[in-house]
Amino acid sequence: MDNHGKFGLKKVINASGKMTILGVSKVSDQVAAAQKAAGQTFFEMADLTVKSGQYVADLLGAENATIVSSASSGIALSTAAVIGQGDVYHTYHHLTDRISKREIIIPKGHNVNYGTGVEVMVTLGGGKLVEAGWANECTPEQVEIEITDKTAALLYIKSHHTVQKSMLTIPQMSEIAKKYGLPLIVDVAAEEDLKKYYAQGADLVIYSGAKAIEAPSSAVVVGRNPYVPWVQLQNKGIGRAMKIGKDNIIGFVTALEEYLSNGSESGEHMIARLTPFIDQLNAISGLSAQLVQDSAGRDIFRASVKVTSDKLSALAVISALKVGDLAIYTREYQANNGIIEFDIRAVDAAEMTAIITKLQTIMAS
Ligand SMILES: *Cc1c(COP(=O)(O)O)cnc(C)c1O
Image 1 (cartoon, protein in one colour):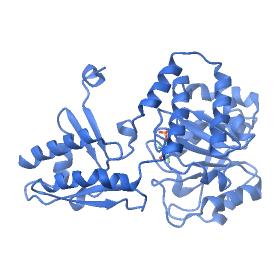
Image 2 (image 1 turned 120 degrees about the vertical axis):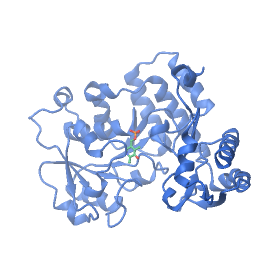
Image 3 (image 1 turned 180 degrees about the vertical axis):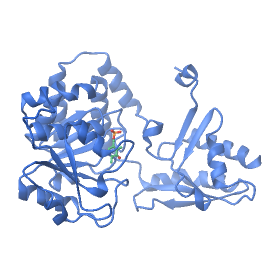
Image 4 (image 1 turned 45 degrees about the vertical axis):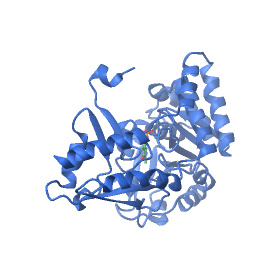
């Protein structure tokens, strides 16, 4: 099936990392087969929601979990859950005046734009976001002074998108939540450790399915009771507008099982795949390539390519890579320093050859 030809779309090689704007990640053959099998059968969907959630919770050593359509919906549904607290009236009238406890406290430096704003999703769930601290600082005291009888929950976002310095930790946030009897929601959409944040005391932990886990469009909310069933109750309310299909629920579980048994690609394996690629890059005149480790110290390696040509800048090469029928996306953060990075986590051998061929043409022009 040639969807690119059918709609007149460019073919894309994603050497930039897990990017939502390119479709995030690719599913394995086994996950695609699981989606197909589920798509061609029926389930009692309410039962599938509860039992697939419990199955995932058991795999992760958590009390409960529920599979949802996206991490964004996970934020909105968790917000609605902690405000409504299992009340069916609230589920049918989620913005009701009968409930005034709607404030969700977040460190100010965590109210970020990851494609949409965290605040947009909290508002969608009927929450009123209260920012604690300052853009570049949030201490435990600064969170505590925002707590009132209107506070419904605390929210913490762990991500490279947020301000990193002078921020309280998840264990500190969890301690405050316990002290005041409030639930703690944690959005760790792109993180790889599926147990750590629950163990640190978070009550609802949100992971995006298509990022680290490489599942189809989906997410999981891992957490404790009664919060998880309160999230599931939203399927009779605002959750209906964020419904996930049976195919993606089963696809998520299959991808999770693969992720738990194989993990992500190791740095060592990436180095082995990158070594011949870097040699080929160095054979192109005007480019000088070397192996680099992720700047945040994660077990991720990339090809860092310095554009040494006096005719073309790194920015010019980056735009030329996207022109034509095959658009090649790279990491552009260091382009101003004349450097292009290739992240090969979602790039196979044939695509590496295509990258080399296109670069040879660009550099010879
Ligand atoms: C990607 C991301 C999300 C959204 O994930 P979706 O599954 O695409 O909705 C939410 N929060 C953070 C921090 C993210 O990085």
